[in-house]
Image (cartoon, rainbow, N blue to C red; front, side, top):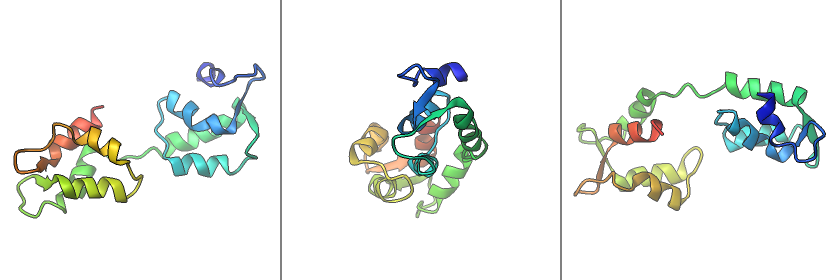
Length: 136
């Protein structure tokens, strides 16, 4: 883990700039939200460089709080929008959810996710959608 941290040390002083903690966490397989990154970054000066010893507790906190959301959790959430109870929701509704709730996605990001997901009626099988998104 320390080796991955060192990749973000552009000065050779065994420290990384506080603005790089999100990228360092992601390089180590974590998926912090922007608000998580901001929360930890705000605990330091904007021009501060932090050593591995300061970074490690941040990594551990993110790792421990790692979202336990599973595909089942996502499906359950989307099921509330399945008015017909047939496993489909309208792509317009899903697009709206993805751009307005939680970690808001851009229109371009949503377009990437939804490409090839719609049926001929403009609906999306949300279980297949969740499977494709969560499987990477």
